[in-house]
Length: 334
Image 1 (spheres, rainbow, N blue to C red):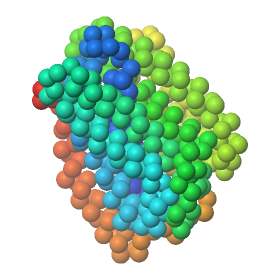
Image 2: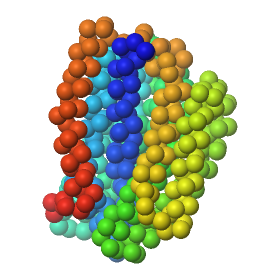
Image 3: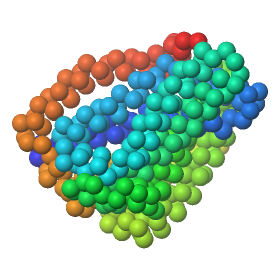
Image 4: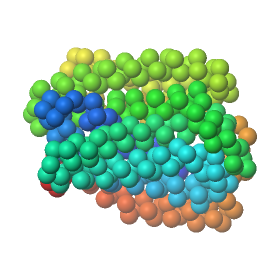
């Protein structure tokens, strides 16, 4: 493994972290969107506010980290991705901005129409953004981003593999968030809400299973190389994801609480890591290898050093934040 591989691995750690923490964040917005009218959805939305309020801004730290690592360590790939997939990237950025604005302004809105408008912006953006990220991953993995950039701005993300990636991203976020919110409801000793999100975890898990099975046929037709790698090199990780999904859903069906968040997170992490393993050693499709897209070794060495220092400075703060939030010792401002 050379230096560019190490930097790519360090960058991919950020991708996995964003899928888990940002994914749960987006998934909470999905359940906010589907909670129903003002009265029926009052309690689930209140729990969403309590759960993500203290951490929603911190979760996007990983997105910034991944972008910095990509444009500094792999400028060729960064240029190719941004000049080809600029439409979903703009939509995702717009979704992040509107989502944050909607979430913040909903808290301070005093009129019901304003609350509904801001709540709709928050919830709809929570679906749009992960869909765009999933479609971007599909475009990259299926080889629709040319090494020189300026690929087809439409078909690069509106294709069967990208649609599959977008749908799977939204469903995975919802699945993960349902387990997190069920645990949060249990911590608040609210058995009704815990049951509410437990049922939604089962529903999201079932949908994720159906989409995954359908995805086998989509990838086999539209991205045969990715399908081959996932069904060979990535097979153990796909099997681990399926096993965790089954165990998590069985636990939710039986009302088991121990380890349910961790099992759900492991299922999602296994899928993301499986994609990375299937993609290796290419950064774009099967035409741009990691070392071909990498910056000079001097730049990579500096970047790796900066990443290590950042980890030493930021990780303890994030761990403390999530620990306090997990213990219910933080409350969002109202």
